[in-house]
Structure formats: C-alpha cells, structure tokens
Length: 60
Image (cartoon, rainbow, N blue to C red):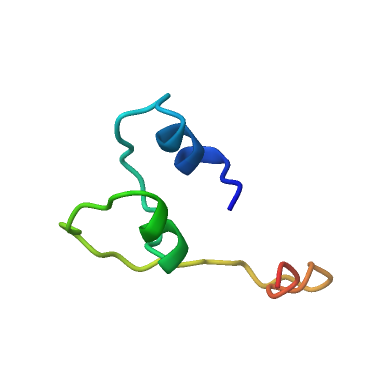
C-alpha cells in the first residue's frame, strides 16, 4: 500500500508517534503499531434542518 498522512509520516520516520483518533483497520495494523486504547468515544453529527437546505445525507 502507498500510505499518506499520519501513517506515511510514521513509516518514513518523519514522526515517532501520533496522537489522534485513527481507526484501527487490518491494513493499518499491519503497517504500524498501535497502543492499547485508553478511551473510546463515538462520533456525533448535529445538523439544523431548514427548508431548502442541502440534504443532511448529501455527503454520503
């Protein structure tokens, strides 16, 4: 895989560690080491419904 962003920074030794909410996937786990999670949180989205506004699911 060709990585970019935080994973690329780690793999190319431009960073020693990163603190972020990065989802652990099989591919990422094979490429970099993850610590044991110390906290799990959910992601929420709050929108205002207005007539004529773009659909709240338009980004899907």
